[in-house]
Image (cartoon, rainbow, N blue to C red; front, side, top):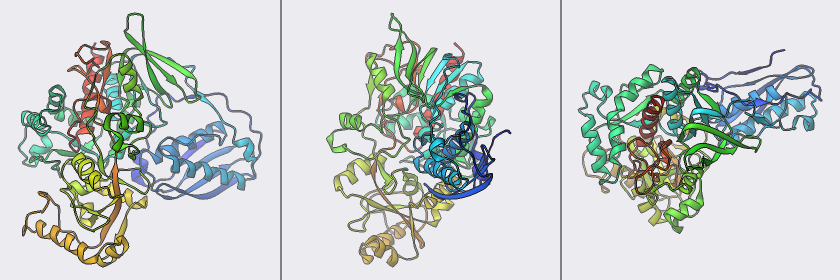
Length: 590
């Protein structure tokens, strides 16, 4: 009987759970089952990252026939992917011996333990089911015209752009799912001179946007990459639209000191957008190799890079060769040794809240071949890493949607929350030294746009925020002086009404803060790094003197330095997506 894995999910969740895997790992033949079951459907309720998960497992006398997962609040494209991936593996292999999905441990354990509980109810021999089934790509090609290391947004767009233009592409991803840091974001892209701006009467053009990026960074940003971003915003919008990825047409946001609104949010949310792009990759024939951790660049006798090597899911060393090698493996925030090396001892132990596994392995591999580095000492620390589960940065709520930050020790504000991430975090919060701070916002934030509403809903489902119906109740719970907290909020509301100027120089709020109030406990953390490999105008990795390390070695996204310095909200997504789109087309044309 054909095995079935089905998911009964809310409509939004169903719309985003695209497999996006054109080349699944080839498991060895599933062993004959050595355990019997009492046929039937059994139910188990487990706790995931976002709350209860109901797992229904159907057994015949001799097999696990199907796994159904009901409505749940797991993170889209992270927890939901873990549930899908592990359910498929368990049914295909008839074994429970599967590893948790990196970055989605709670969701993984909920699914695994749920099926295990159902199997116990069905009278199975659990010890037999716990055997491990190894998966590899040993029987599939290890050569491609273009090898892309990393399946975040930059890797996805590069692979998709190249494949749509006729290139043969293998994308190598160390996790069991794609998306990287992008799926943890609020989905804002920093773009200029677009038709969406014009439709709302916003006057902007590519040249003004380019110059603003240079000026805002005090000349620190790479002019070549600034030009690439400025000139390709509309092209990105049109390309995304052709594949069914849409932007919010009702609102363009102002961000990080820009007098011109340039924040373009994808609609309905970033998870849907990334999932749609993954589906387009599948249609374009991109060959995706999951659980393949690349850590080495291969060179021939002439020093020319001709491939990569690393480990597969079974821990075996593997090699891939290609005509062009693209590094899109993200930053190095998940490597405390590198944080200390480049930022100093003061940042030892800084909590990482980005996509797991971004440890700088490929940056260091390129460094061994003589690659240059840039902006490695730029301390891009985020001020609003939630401290209960260390899984997300909530900056957009306070930056654009009227929220504020207060000290847990005094109940008072201490900064312009819309100043740069690092100015608030590494300079103000780091110097104050409080163990955590409180982020306060209200229901108006939900009305800001649909992407923000989606994120706030996910924070609530994951138990990251508390609701209070009065300042009195909030002050009591936060253990701060009620009069001080009331004065703090009254000052903010007076500024919103135009009665006073903000004491910290903040220029933009949203609406007056009103009950019910929502509070999250936050602290300094790192979600992405801004320093990386030096690249030239072709996005080739170059040495300190500007000469290419190898004429076929490229870097895009967070691993590429020079652009994200003096970070601007939304710039990481635009940098990744446009860099991938441009490079993929460029390489396919060679």
